[in-house]
Length: 69
Length: 267
Ligand SMILES: Cc1ncc(C[n+]2csc(CCOP(=O)(O)OP(=O)(O)O)c2C)c(N)n1
Ligand code: SF4
Ligand code: SF4
Image (cartoon, rainbow over all chains, first blue to last red; front, side, top):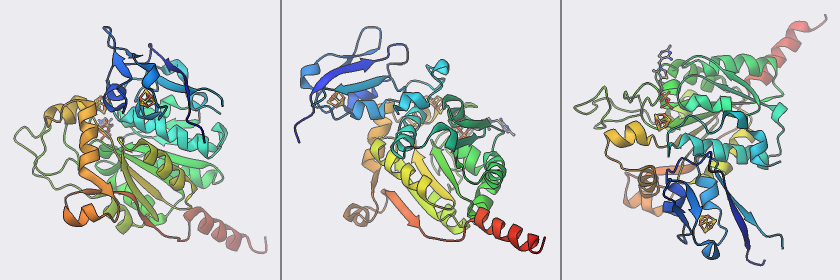
């Protein structure tokens, strides 16, 4: 199976409360909180599409969209 | 169906504090339901009162938001009336085992086909951080400023002893396991108890100096182990995760049906 390729992170800035769980647990340090304490994908090129950020988000505010193979 | 389609999006962002584990339970419970391919109309969610119980307001199933500690009593009525529906009852540790302890053991004893999810943050979140029957000795709470001296229940052992036929435990750190276990709990025919350790950074975390929500989840990783692991033998303090108990036993609604048939004989 080919490695999944990232299309984009869809981040719902209205729902994100800046708890930092996704930032803390991302294995590739892709995510950061910006100066308004909302998550942004600062280094999307490093994302391995493990979706752990999406699964652990308490606010259902982040979705990892993978390219269709 | 995408998990968002199971939400009542008009109530978002939700009321839980930043980093509250209850949202992670919601997130992954919806994934279980999506993976089982259940439609909204096949599910009834019944909850009581507490931060955890607010979960029923956010899902677009049949929902009942009832009274503190009594969700299982309402759920028993719903299930007996409409046994073809999947009944899910999320509860806080206070809701399930303090005020609701009696309903809890009797629902387990009857082995009625309900999925009970105990969202265990070891404290009363909604009312300001009082200790609960799951806080445990030595913990701090607003009502235990010099440390708690009450023993805690082991939810899994209690459920098993009371007659639950499916008992499992996991944590918000182990998000994929939440999905996997809730799926199996829903499929199990009988009373299923899923205990999920979920962080309350606002009260339990702050009172017990456990740090941020992420740090509390790091503790779930550190302090738990898969059931039957070598690590548990080396360190008995570790809390076991996984399916702890699963047996087949006559289910309450089925037995009740038999009684109706017997009573109706010749009529
Ligand atoms: C009959 C009754 N007694 C007490 C209360 C006050 N009360 C509301 S929620 C709650 C406990 C909340 O703790 P828990 O069930 O553990 O849920 P959490 O908020 O931590 O998710 C209490 C005591 C109530 N609403 N009704
Ligand atoms: S999918 Fe995995 S690697 Fe990509 S941002 Fe999320 S946690 Fe990080
Ligand atoms: S008080 Fe605790 S349980 Fe309630 S929403 Fe806040 S973090 Fe969650």
